[in-house]
Amino acid sequence: MRYLRLYLSFLRFSFSRAMEFRVDFFFRVVMDAGYYVINLAFFTVIFRHTTLLGGWDLHQIYIFVCGFLLVDAIHMTMFANNLWWLPIFINRGDLDYYLTRPVSPLFFLSLRDFAANSFLNLLIAAGLMAWSLLRYPEALGWGRIAGFLFLLLVGTLVHFLFRLMFIIPVFWLHSNRGLDEVSWSLLQLAERPHQIYRDWLRFALVSVLPLALAVSIPAHVLFEGISLARASHIAGVTGSMALVVYGFWRWGLSAYSSASS
Image 1 (cartoon, one colour):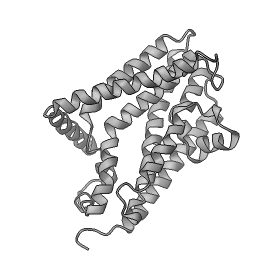
Image 2 (cartoon, helix red, strand yellow):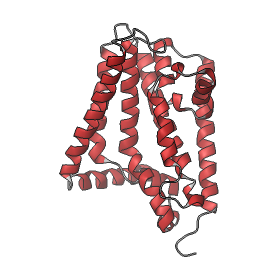
Image 3 (cartoon, rainbow, N blue to C red):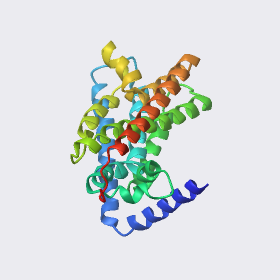
Image 4 (cartoon, helix red, strand yellow):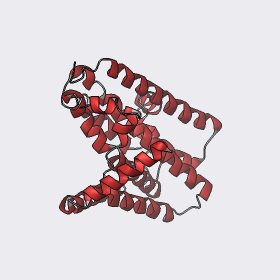
């Protein structure tokens, strides 16, 4: 409950601050709306020349794309600002202020800045997700839809952990962004169905750098159902990734040189 009250305080502060910069608020809405239109238009153009992409038709691709847009919107709203500031705090020694507080520093640094000016874009992405599901020509069932949405939340966690993993090297590199540019390049692989890639890359995206868990695997579960093996794989890979990234974070903290050292 203490962490919940703390997060609610983050939300109140973030929304009050966002209202002070209304031009930025509306600019982000326009910018992200354009991004959504471009992604949907991109696949619409592709399907003027083919009927299937990775075994999926246009209706299924729309659900996949809207799922990706929803995961991206959640990430931009909840995590992106925090991950932007983390390397700055490490390099300037400001991390000291968070290490001495009576809460988990990783919780505080990951969730303190809720991007309220991206919240409307999150609602737009959720609306697009509802639109893609409602226009699907076959009955999906509420159970499958609920499972799909839950797996998208798991995918959002994977997205966050993936980016954090490439930012943590700042502890040793002392660069502006660590290896974050590499993570952005690799994240583009998640914007396409994983079944279009070659076998070795597909395996990597499912099990090693599990970007397919962000949207592609949840979409497969929605269309084809889930088996015990698939559920165990998702849970095992996600849990393993969380443990590895947390261990990497603790290792980074042990190498941190504070402002007072």
